[in-house]
Image (cartoon, rainbow, N blue to C red; front, side, top):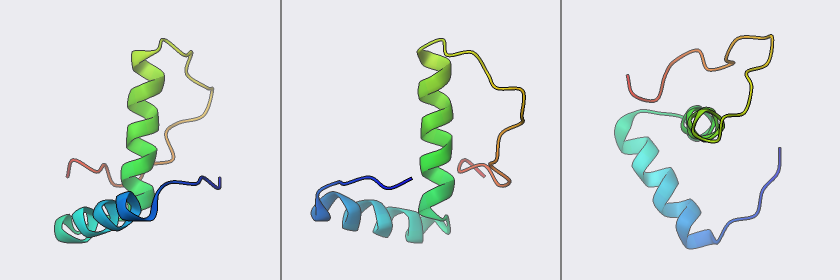
Amino acid sequence: MHISIPNDIKKQFHAACVLRGLKMSQVVTELIEQWLKTNNVPASSGESMTTDKATQ
């Protein structure tokens, strides 16, 4: 997936992830999963691809 976000937001996000010892992709995956649940999107037949939850 390729997305465009303002550079200043990307830098803030990257820094926040580094401080927490997380990969940006981990956090983005969890945020998308939360959005899907909030918006009542049916789950796919596969499990989450997140191996380490961003909240750990």
